[in-house]
Image 1 (cartoon, rainbow, N blue to C red):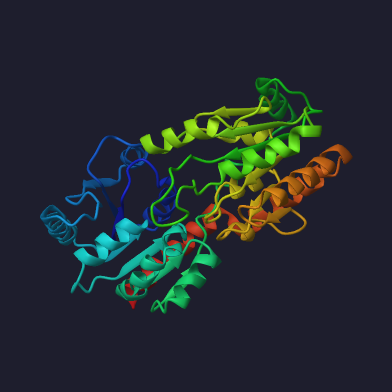
Image 2: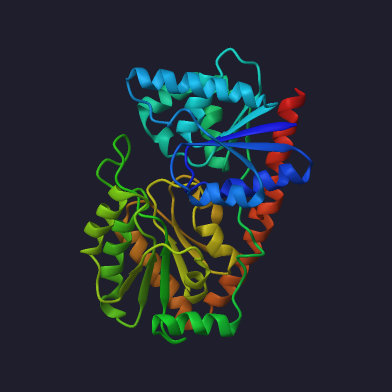
Length: 379
């Protein structure tokens, strides 16, 4: 079959690559439709794989202008010229574009939902209750997101995680861990917590004035935690996702203390996990996030109860705290620190690895997505 994959970014969204690989391994043809722009990391990865990339006639910005209608009309012509057996789209702007461009077109439409943030807006949720009926299948990237779409009465839903590459993300050797900790200037007796996340600027429709990843919550909790534990270290890894994100990051950096190190984004985040004793995901809204990478590398996680994050741990592998609760997050850091000092955190780390491999291995998840696309065509 011929698959048109539409996504509104050429920089992020590399979690779509395993799906494309699984489809092509089965002999299917994939054409990627990306926004006009520079050579982002997703576009480069697609070129390296030999995947055909079409530059979208629509920029995925929904503004009340005649250019929006012209762009959607151009996208409709492009998609028809690709002549796919199935349309497959990720991220909400991509879903809106494909639904409008595909009105009256009987080609199957499979929407894979990367995260639940947009559904936290009452306005978008009301709109989505109607528009999701234009999808043939909605794949929730988590049980949490799939349940949200079932409540919206989407015609057909299923849940498949994006997953994690459990071969690439694997527990570090003692030598690798020691080298990564030495690069931070710490030894084995120092407790290291990490947070790996881009800094996204505050959104207009949800969590107004707040970054959704919860950096501000963690920085406040760490300030309380470090008072009687000055030997501990917090490592933040992630730059601003865009210009507005960089500006928000600069404001957050004013809250840093002496035991906090903040590094901009790097292509390989494994060094950070290898050095860490616990990973923290204090998001206000999230799918599975960084907790899967951490778990695959044998790093226990403290996660908020936002979205699908609680699916990534159980009581034997990590801690779940209420979102935006500084006191609860501080208590969880203290619990992890106590286990580190007692020498019992390593057993929790091993359980984290086993659970992540069993539930979130990327290869199995990608194969399941390919199954859904094939079934949508055969319906």
